[in-house]
Length: 191
Image 1 (tube, rainbow, N blue to C red):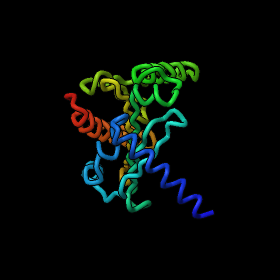
Image 2 (image 1 turned 135 degrees about the vertical axis):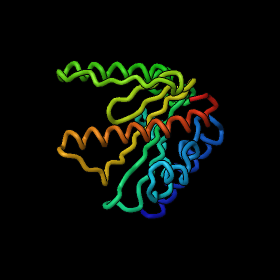
Image 3 (image 1 turned 90 degrees about the horizontal axis):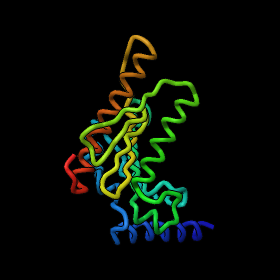
Image 4 (image 1 turned 120 degrees about the horizontal axis):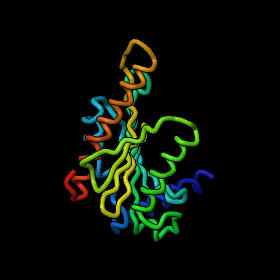
């Protein structure tokens, strides 16, 4: 049983590495290194974990988690997918731009359906197009779809829950923008 699991794990890791080496998709853990993740978050972080989640039409995901899970916890999740990878994996999306536009539309429609105010926020100066949905910063860069999700609220204080939520969201957005600018630059496009 353990040998079967180990073989599958190594096979999956090998397939991910070969796709990344074939430049079908950029390595999200290479676009934000462990050292850069620690610098951005200002706390010790574990090494990035790479996952191929294309079976679920997500793309490649790199996750960084803080070493201390309680006192100063935080995380960074970078999801990346390309038009080429979507074509090769029979994705429901036709291209990175198609995925970007569909998710943007779904987000704004969900707010309308729930009777919530439109919190959609266009972010200028990142890639070809970018928006913040309150949780993730979604960026379109050439034929690359990029989703950055930062959770960095520990240690913050405010007078009430709503003020605390706003401070946490502002910090998460600010860190997401810094990470996105770094990644967009590495992808060869000025942020």
